[in-house]
Length: 199
Image (spheres, rainbow, N blue to C red):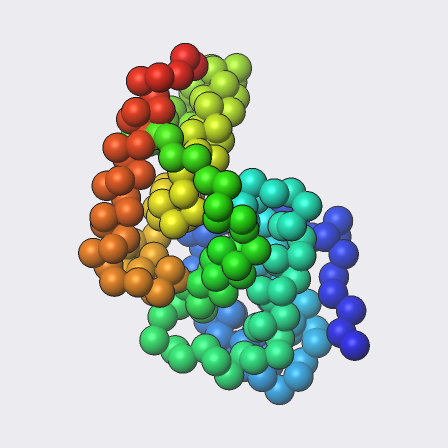
């Protein structure tokens, strides 16, 4: 049985702008050959990104670790399923997204919203007041929690991971126009949320 890496030994952050496609391709090739060291390196690269994505997606800290394990076990057990028609990260996030949807209780969703563009600018501004920045983050987390999972995923992947709609469509396994529609509805809901909340 494969023993997975303990999360405390993992790096805290990874810059998604760093182009590691060549390294990831090599790691995946080695994983296909059963190379555990390659899988451990792959795990360390993706753990922080998946943790943030799944934490925001599910809003369930108890299930995040399990979902990460399940996602990365698919990579370990079935690396040949990567079809080379997208980036490896698109494939991995797609697996995580579908695992998260499956685990979430869809019947207990609330539908509310916020102004994403302004908040994204504020959160990305290092000169912004730290207290205000934390309040904005808290407010954004509450607002995102109010979105249905499909819309929340589109917002997360667009603003936190800077992915194009085309990549998001592959991750969510839906047409690009569906991604655009989900973004439209998410923005409207977020604007309603912003109008009804004080922050």
